[in-house]
Image (cartoon, rainbow, N blue to C red; front, side, top):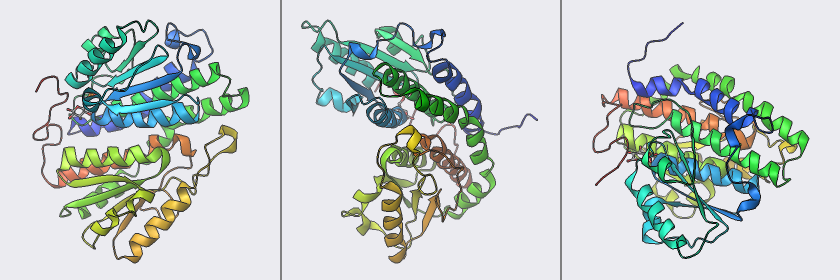
Length: 373
Ligand code: BG6
C-alpha cells in the first residue's frame, strides 16, 4: 500500500530500506563479480593513506567511513571538515587518495578545499588523486575530480539530509570491503558474512521504522525541552554528532553529541533534570561478531557506566538499543549498527519539528547546500 507523506523529510526517511538495498546491490553484492561499480577506481595498492573532506551531514558519514576504512581495511585515514582544511590543510603526498564527500556536489567549501589540495599537489605529486562521492554525477565536485561515484539515493528534497546519509555509508562500506579484500584483510568466510549482514539491512531498517509511533510519542514529550545531549561510542560517536545536527537543523533545539566516555570529563556538569540524554547503546545485546573480526569493544560497558552515572545524578536517559531501551533495535553487528541507530534520531527530529510547528522541509537560516556565502 502506497503511504501518503505530508513532508519530504518523512518520505525520504521511509525510502531508506529501498535506497540502502539499491546501494548494497550496487556496491557490495557485486564486489568480486564482473559488475562495474568499482571498475576504474584506484586499487588499494595505489595509495597509502586516505584523507576525507566534507561538511555537515556528509562530514558525519565521512567519520563513519574513517572507522570502517581503518578498522576493516586497515588503511590510515584522516577526516577534516572542508572549511577547516582551508584554514589548516593536511599535507598531501603522492600516496594520498583525497576523498571529497558532498550530497549536492556543489558545496563551496568542498570545492575550495579541492582546489587548494590540487595546488599543493601540482608541485610534482603525480600520484595524488581526488575521488568524489556525491549524489549527482553532473555536479561541479563530481566533474572536477579524478574519480567519482554517485551514492544513487535519488533526489533528496528536504533540506535535512537523511537517505543520502545512509547511501553515503553504504558506499564507504563498499569501498572498505573492496580495498580490504585487495589488501588481504578480509578472508573469504568474513566476506560471505559481510555480504549477508549487509543484505539484511533493509529489513532491519524497516523494523526500526515500525516503531515510528512510539518515537513520535517520545518526540512530543520533548516539546518543551531546550537542550538535549546525545552520547555514542566508537562507530556510533559520529551518529551522536549527526543526531545532534538533525535536531538543531530541524527543531532549533540546542543539541550536542559527545563520545560517552569523554562526556564525563567536564561536560557532565551541564546536566540537570531538565536536560535529557539520548544514549546510543548498540552493545549489548549487539554483541561484536567474532566472524567479522570487529575491533575490540568496551563501548557497551562504558556506555552502561556513563548512563548509570547520569541517572544517579537525576537526569533522564532515553536509550536507543540495549537492555533498557526506550527504542529497541534489531540484533545487529556493532560495525553495522550506524545504519540502525541513525533512523530513530531522524524520526525524532522530524516529529519534534512537527510538534513545534516548524516547517520541517525548509528550516530557517539554512539551505540544502551552501554553494555561495
Ligand atoms: C549545509 C546543509 O549547508 O551543507 C547541511 O545545511 C549539509 O544539511 C551540508 O549537510 C553539506 O552539504 P553537502 O551537499 O555538501 O553534503
